[in-house]
Length: 235
Image (cartoon, rainbow, N blue to C red; front, side):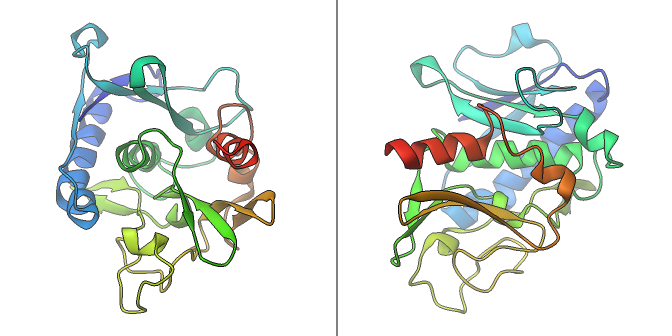
């Protein structure tokens, strides 16, 4: 899999986009692929969109995302012919005091978030049953959205492991990259989950999940909206 990063943001220099892409490529190669037992994806920044190979999937960095509530940070989806694509917005993070390449909810950590979830669940349609009547969306970064960690000095998103989706996983299992969770389907204070239970679709937020982020998790293309629609319609 080749994931092409293209920068259309006026707020993020191409040099930073290239640095972020290199860090996320290293993150997948060193951290994500081994824990998920998958061949790593190539993540490459293309300064010229015309040079992106036809078979590549892509994530575009923009200032804001059109047709979405003000401040939505990003999403990924599957287009025609199985083409995977995503968008990461830079302005919402920067407007709320965050940075481009450092710290929690940085542009780089949000870009990492979208790339990792595209890598693990490309079609954005998998669910995991907890064995107690609740199904959780297969989103590897949402439950541990903060704190982030660094790769080569660039902040990237924490992520959960396959054990997080396994209701029979032992307590000694590793449930996320940073080792902060201690059981399946658990959530950090800075994370959230989308789940379906007793025929109702819901979201649950960690106690320190920022209010400015909650307001953004709506809209027709937002991940929670699409996940909840899948649960409602059985998709």
